[in-house]
Image (cartoon, rainbow over all chains, first blue to last red):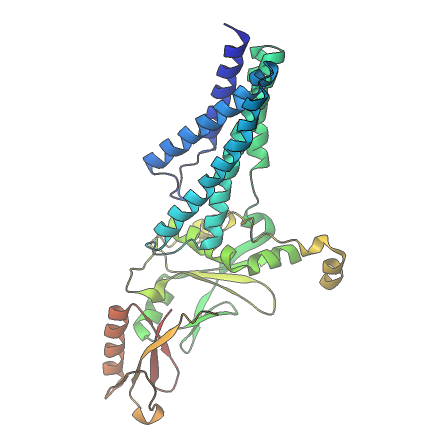
Length: 296
Length: 62
């Protein structure tokens, strides 16, 4: 087999494999749609081809071919707007919405993963071209492990302590521990809340966590993921059972109240811990001098 | 700033505590009737009932 062919083949294979591995099909319900998987695999293969072809093209002094990399980058930016648009449309019919921040985060991940595939194919192609296919495969594996590690964002469990809270009423006002949620008028609704609802308190470890949890988009993501995992006791005409996340102004703690179908507090706590910290919400005031001074 | 919460209706068993305005007011004779009207309105409009604590319920579209 010629070196060119070998380079292309191994580059494309490793890139496509990486894209496949990074496609998560789980409770987040996305992209579990079979056609979504096809779309993203196809785009991944295209990205891998572009990446893999770059090194042989350079070696052949075909510099115009390399400019296609830049062209491809603009194409993949479209992926982000495509995902955003679709998720926004679907979000309108969700019982518990994801919110724009979560959607933006997901869309950005889709775009970034295509670039990762391109870089991997480029790297693997380069290594294969200048050494042999054995090292190429080795590089591919290393790239796979590194990209999985690098792209693994933080989760709520790493920035805050999550514990159970007590759901109670003061008159018509719903509380979890000392965090006020909302006013509920009907006696029957209050009864259902007392019987079926679960409350969780999220206590940030430091000021960074506090600032992150204050973000409204982050809080909607928590409510959405909790509802997706435990099921939700709600229909379109019972808006009062929408899970909500509210903040204690005094302590910066955040509380979640949800009326789930499966009343299991340990699972709810685990679910909340695993909610991803959104890139747009993640905030680090403690990294600045003023932020540190304000903290003490 | 977008205004996205609206009072759709007021349901009360104490009519002297509300007056005028652009919101429809439903007057009931007792708490049961008030609860019943509020439930039906909430289901139909997909709103949420809040209790002002003085015998007045407001129906809000969130």
